[in-house]
Image 1 (cartoon, rainbow, N blue to C red):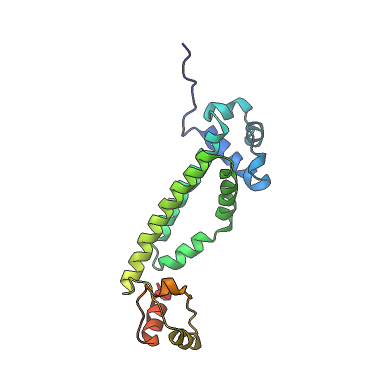
Image 2: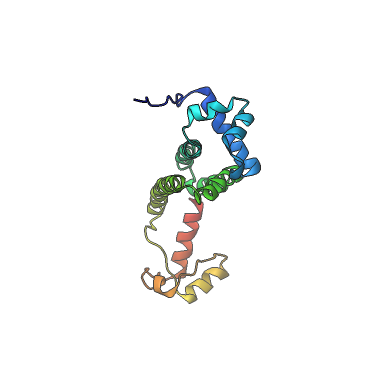
Length: 194
């Protein structure tokens, strides 16, 4: 009877070094450059250690993605506690470094089903937290529902320097219409200050 192969501890220093090396390779050369030999070389460790800590390359990619996703959720939670959570969330969401590694993981997910499922799982977790924060801000400003405006109200608001998103007719017809453009302008100004 064969015994299960040992796997290195999840909190081992070398494991973190290998994950860092895999990420660096992804950012510098793209996900296709990430092989067990290249990761070991980048980490200045023996190639056997890659498979000591990760049974497969899929396991390595999943661990690297989960680590970044968990860190991202923690950072987003801090951001959403800011005095102006929508602005803070915007700045958090456009971080070029986070975007670069995320794009590499998304490209890789086209070839790795397990990673694709993990990305979908974490995307939903991020969206849930963002939705909670957005709902709280809208509630705080008394704008719990989406605002739909008529063409005349839109023109009036644009004259006042407020840009309005145009909804397709089938969507706009289901949204409440404000009776005065001034109330829409005031609500939008308050939201922008949130």
